[in-house]
Length: 459
Ligand code: ZN
Image 1 (cartoon, protein in one colour):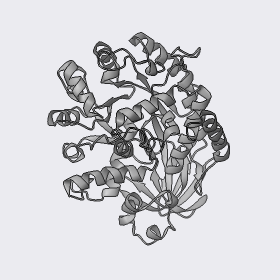
Image 2 (image 1 turned 120 degrees about the vertical axis):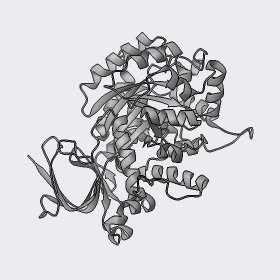
Image 3 (image 1 turned 30 degrees about the vertical axis):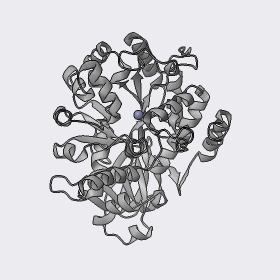
């Protein structure tokens, strides 16, 4: 049976439609959109934006969000590498049940903040001793189950992680991540894909953790085998030390090496790509590869600023991700990205493009389109007939929203709102979050609390 929602407004690629009725079929797909219509179905005093795409997540790291800020002890400068040691310690203690409970809570929180799709960059593969589980894809399956319970669409990006650093064996602490050979990785991929078939709204992507984590021959072999049917993700050039090590080992910078050895194309999603020279920025833009920027995590870890203005001038494609989940608000990610640029360029038009000056609209659109590609979805239109109806609904009665004309709406949302301005989130045509609460919040949070108590890491 069809269902109908009538919204005060709905954002399309050409701007706002007003008094819009969205009809949804029995499996949650959009069957019709009618503007200036008579009210049909549920009347919602809100504005519908396309659901945000979270293009980079490590679910287990949510358990340590906010825990790496007590800079005690030696007084030595705390940096990415000391944070990583704390993260490894956590990764070694998580059971499959823990992972599912943490990921379910995280994904429910993502949905509450307006994300409807997530690309999970998954590299925690084996048991605490580093041995494969009986079900090779045990932990990947837990992530799929978590996404299903929370209601978010997931693209599980299965990561190949082979060694500890450039030409260095894995550290003992990395034992849960490691596939020794590319054939081990392919077996894991095969099992993951087989299991994914039995989960709704679930797809699989591929990737390598980073250049330092896989032998060069295997990187080239995996990249050459790409058929373009799955998105390929990689962490790259996040840290200056990674660039120094790569130069010392290969005589090239990471992105330079990738561009020179692999057929980089629009199926590639380079996560962070923070430190780039001119050749690398031009190379990414020219090959139509995509960059996944994670502004709150990159800021939290002190990574650096992506050369956004230059990349944008070359028509580069980018999406956003929440990575370590220190922040979960998509509007905040866009703001941090923008303000980092403003503070260094002393200009305010970060998202200006092709004579189009609506910053909020441009940011939502650019991040959404590339975010869809990061999920392995090629549709590039907001609210296309036949697509799942996934939307975040903004409160039309919030004071700044109620008094704004449609030309100011996107900027009011991106620059001057928080989650209290969201009425809820609709996925597959159903409210999953309404009035700020996830449908299954009570049971999800009870399991999460029990898990954190068991791990004891937040005490
Ligand atoms: Zn990451």
